[in-house]
Image (tube, rainbow, N blue to C red; front, side, top):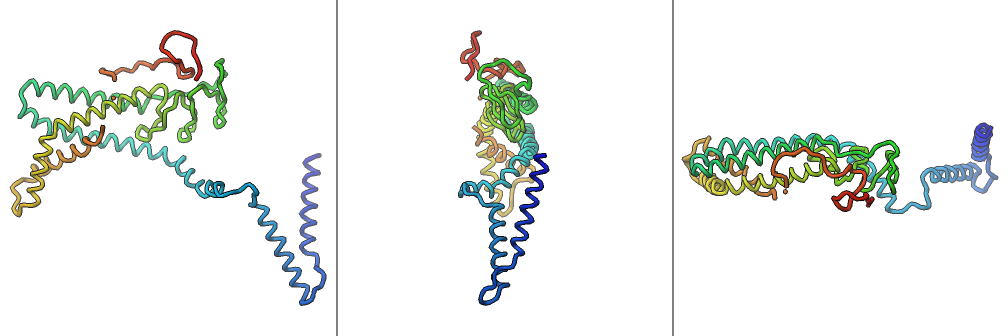
Amino acid sequence: MLMGSSWRWQLSRAMRLTLRWCRPCRPQRGGGNKGQLSELWSYSGLLLKSLYHNSLSNSDTLLDCVFEPVYWIVDNVTRWFGVVFVCLVVLLTTSVVVVVYLYILPTIISTYPVHWVVWHLCCGHWLLVMVVFHYYRATTTSPGHPPKDKIHIPSVSICKKCITPKPPRTHHCSICNMCVLKMDHHCPWLNNCVGHFNHRYFFSFCLYMTLGCFYCSVSSKDLFLEAYGSVESYYQTPSPAFTFRETTAHKSVIYLWVLTSHWVTRVLLPSSHLPHGDGIVWDCTFTRRDPMAI
């Protein structure tokens, strides 16, 4: 009954407004049609303003409306950029490994004594294994999500976007469109959120990638200086004395130096054990005490 009466009231109101528009105005000097058109124009302008006018609008609201398409693009396109960034990390890391195996390692074997060669082989391959292992684990390990069932934890709020329990330090990721336990940030280079279960892998990857870049930069410093001087003389000499292979090797060493020298960190062996806690409560200490939500 309420819906029917409301519909009839809206219809009658629209009819009255239409009749009001069509009602002839009082004849005025200069012609009645002009007054009728003026009144019709005024009603049309008032109707148009009623569709978008808001007394609470300001410049901030206007800017939010203007940038809304940009926000939509970020929320819907960033997740696809993650795949591109992961491929870029794999490609750059592979290029460094190829340059080391083709040019740096043969030079080390032919120049340094045996004990230094063994040290370079062990240290270099150890760093390579740690980088690959932790990057793979950080990319493929789920950061952890709060359970959708009711949990008896004090001070648990509800996420307004996914309508699920939200333990302390849990945040909603707009790119993954879900809540993440102890969320740090959404890393596009991993195409994954950094949270409770993969935070250690992300930190270890950053550590060992930094150590690997430092190792490559230090071990190829002399080769870089020699290669840089050779390339400079190659371009300055009218008749180059270097073959194409030697020039390629020199440029590869320079590429390795530039790529690794600008990248400036805990576990000595690969490990896949779970982090402390369940990600739902935050313990202020690592002892077995009552959990305290922060």
